[in-house]
Amino acid sequence: MNPNLQNTYGYANDNALIRHRVLRNTYFLLALSMIPTVLGAWLGVQMQFALFAGNPIISFVVFLAIAFGFFYAIEKTKNSGIGVLVLLAFTFFMGLMLSGLIRHTLGFTNGPQLIMAAFGGTAGIFAVMAAIATVSKRDFSGLGKWLFVGLLVIIAASVANIFLQLPAMQLAISVIAIGIFSAYILFDVQQIINGGETNYISATLRIYLDVYNIFANLLSILGIFGGNRE
Image 1 (cartoon, helix red, strand yellow):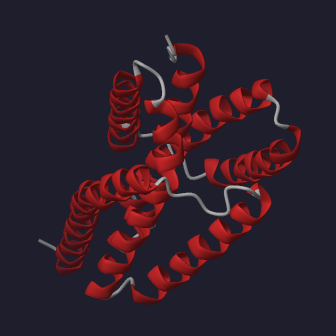
Image 2 (spheres, rainbow, N blue to C red):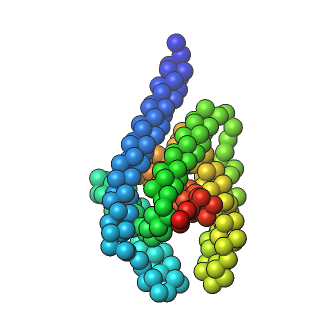
C-alpha cells in the first residue's frame, strides 16, 4: 500500500476515534449534569428560591451576570477536571433557576404528571434530533447564524414580555424556543461528529442549554394547556 495512503487512512481513523470519544464523553457528562440540576430544582422548591422575586428586571440581570460568569469560568477551565466541576456547579444553579417553574407546576393537581410529560417529551426530542444529526448526510452547519438570530429575537421578546405580561406572547415565545433549541441540538451534535467541537465540556454545555430550554418551555406550554387546579 502507498505510504501516503496509509498515513491518510491512519489520520482519518484517529480523527474518527477522537470524535467518537468526544461524543461519548459529552453524552456521559450530559447525563451526569442532570443530577445537580434535579438537586438544585428540588432544593429551590423546598426553599422557595427566587432571585429578587419582587423585581423581575433585576432578577433577569443578576441571572445573566451569574450565567455569563459561569460561561467564562467553564471556558477557562474546559481543558482540566476543574471544568467538569464548574459545569456541574452551573447545572446546579440552573436547577435552582428552574425551581420557580417547577413550584408553579406543582400547584396543579396534575403537576407531577405534567413534569414527567415534559421530561419524556424533551427526551424524545433529544433522541430524535441527535439521531438525525448522527445519521443524516446533510450539513447543518449553515443553521448556526440563523439560529443565533432566532435566539436574539427570543431574548428580546422575553425581556419585552417582562413589561407586557402577555400570555399569548409567552406562549408564542415558548413554541418558537422549542423549535430553535431542537434545531440547535442538530447543529451542536453534528459539530461534534464533524470535528468542529473537540472539547467535551464545551459540547456538554451547549447541548445542556438546548435540552434545558426545551424542557422549561415545554413544561410552560403543558401548564398553560394541561394544568388542572381543581
